[in-house]
Length: 200
Image 1: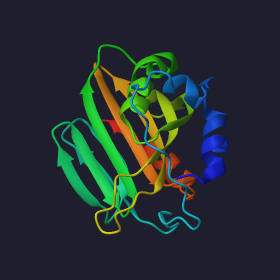
Image 2 (image 1 turned 90 degrees about the horizontal axis):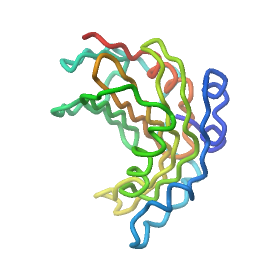
Image 3 (image 1 turned 90 degrees about the vertical axis):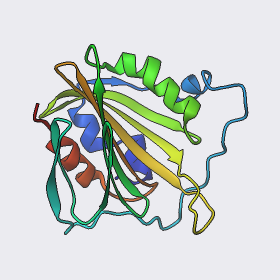
Image 4 (image 1 turned 45 degrees about the horizontal axis):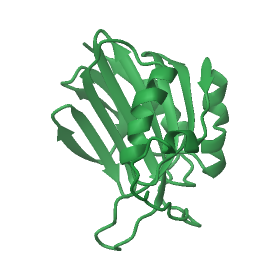
C-alpha cells in the first residue's frame, strides 16, 4: 500500500501503465447525490498497516475460478461472489461477476467510479489507468476514502485504496486493496496484483 505521495503519483505503477486517464475527484463528485457528502477524516500521523517486508504470502485458490498470492495469517471471509482477507485496517477483497465485455479506463470512469464516489465514504479519486498484467490488460483506480467506524475506538481513519478490474471469457474480477493512508505497501500491492491468475 502506498504512502501519501505514492497514491498521487505511484511511480512503479505509472511506468507500466499503457493508457492513463486522470480525472480530478470533483468531476466525479458532480454525480453524487444532492445530500451532503461525508467529510474526509485527516490521515494518521504514524499510520499502522505496513505489510512487513518479511511477510509470508500463500496462494489462495478460489472455487470462483482464480488464484492469487495473499498474506499468510490474515483472516478470511468467503462470500457468494468472492472472498476477503483482513488484518487490522488492511483489507483485500476480490469479487467475481459475469460481464459482457472487458472494462476500459473510459467505461470504469463513466460507470463504476461514479457509483463509487456516490456511495462511498468521502471518496477522492486520484487516478484511473489501464495497466498490463500477467492475467491480461486490467484497469486500476487509486482513491482515498474513510474507513467504517471502528466499533472499539468509535472513530474512522483515512484509507488509501487501489481497485483493479480484470476480465476474461465473460467474467470480471475486481480486486480491492486497502490500507491506512500513508502506509507503505507499494511493492506488496504490486506483487499481489501481478500474482492474480484465472484458473477457469
